[in-house]
Length: 607
Image 1 (cartoon, rainbow, N blue to C red):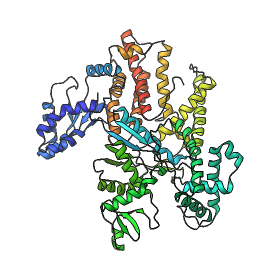
Image 2: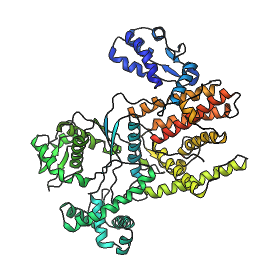
Image 3: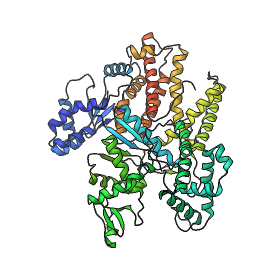
């Protein structure tokens, strides 16, 4: 039950009858939105101004004509016109009450499955597996996971594919480190830890050596030696291949506990090495189809416009082509990405491929997608779901090469510690003013710390519009006030506490919901927010923007706070009102739990 869709469906025939250009009707419908000011109504139709201009009529007159043309319905109170032609819309109390009872018995809380299910492949996370994960890997991982969850919730088939970097220079670093600086006893006892140490140690040696540029190239003797080890690996050197095969299980084991703590489950983890045997065929096929060309001894593909700039002047005007085979015969990341497109398209036959990768890769993916369409995959909807950078407190982008980047495991440990510290501070403050406070066991404290800490990190990231940069601040992330994970988790626990205190089973509210009584405006506002859940889920997936869910959660939490202060539940004036309010409380807990689960965040029953 999408309220916005219902309201727009009431307006659609009237708009279609009045609009001189039927192609503009979807845009006119899009101008019907939730009201920005609750005093003006629940929703607002702002389409009369544009329609009035097209018709050469006063917007107020057009607005009145639209209202007159609306069909009789049990959804809306009589609409009113305000200002230059705004149509204010308010839902009928009886409709709200009936709709609340309907979502109470629905496990999906009114979210209907999509009428046109598609198959999605989502490229997410994509770390280089030879080194520890750091905060720079966070955004792709959790934004991608949230999109997987939301799309599946709507009934789409989704394949999450973690395109691992398991064949690049990072393995040259490990090979060099293993051959020159390994501790055999440490490697035997704990290969994961020893490989992590070797990677950091060699990077440290390179950092103090001369000649390294930002890309790790140049005349740096350490990095030159590492690149030589990588070249031998790619050439099939038996010793390096054997070591690579030895390292891989340990490298993958570095990832497992972090993904588990982040509550991220990825369907496939096909790395660069998986596609390596396919690369020569990719180049040969593109040459045969004349969609790749030889240039100065290399093989290149056109830019997104289909142009291969030849002269220096053309190169200044046009986006560059991309190399898929170098002059020395080596392949590139572009070649691997094209092989990946081919494999995904032919194996999973997706309608849509989403690449959750940072904004700096925009030109790369623009070229990849254009070439994939030329290659025969024009029916696939390719989307670069790009995101902004994570900044340090100095508002500069984290740089792994300059050091100072926090490893993800350390970050999650710090978040859990801070989460527990703030939880205990809040508990002590509430205890000091006479509130009854839950006294958890040590095991329960550890669970609360982990759920609150990890949730804080994920929620803080996901609450940002993915296209913007944001400042990473662990103290703010773990805050318990405002739009934070801890606040939502506490709101959920507070709802569950009411049922424990009253010794009330929630089952009957989900199978045979009582009549809803709306006797206070706080009840009405809360009911309206609960009913908006389906439209928020639809909006979040329309442009792949999970932050809309966190905005919605904040609105629900504020509405619930107003309800909690003004509407006694267990001490309501009548049994009927008590049951009605208990139903609202149960729905608040269910909506929070479901919405926060779509973000990959957990809750605890008691806090």
